[in-house]
Amino acid sequence: MNRTIITVIGKDKVGIIARVCTYLSENNINILDINQSIVQGFFNMMMIVDAQNADKEFSVLVSEIEKVGNELGVKIKMQHEDIFNVMHRI
Image 1 (tube, one colour):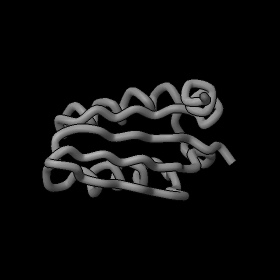
Image 2 (cartoon, one colour; image 1 turned 30 degrees about the vertical axis):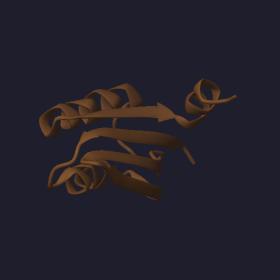
Image 3 (spheres, helix red, strand yellow; image 1 turned 90 degrees about the vertical axis):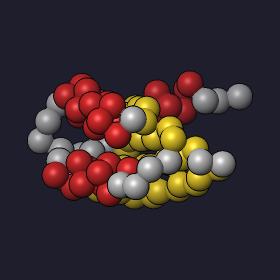
C-alpha cells in the first residue's frame, strides 16, 4: 500500500469534491478515508488515499492535482504519508 495524504483548502464552491474524486478515479487512486468541513465559507478536506495502483509517477500526480486545485481556485497538496507525519508531529 502506498498511503498518501491529500489536503484541499480554499473558498467553498460547488464541485470541489466531485472534481478531486474524479481525478483520483481516473488515475486508479483509491480513497481510504475522507473528512471535510466548511467553516464560514471556507472549505477544508483531508483524504487518505492508496496510490499504489496509479500508472503515473508520484511527482506527476502531485503536479496534476495541484493544477486541478488551480482550476478550482483552491490549494491542493499531495504528500506521502511518511513526509506528512514528519512535518506534523509535535
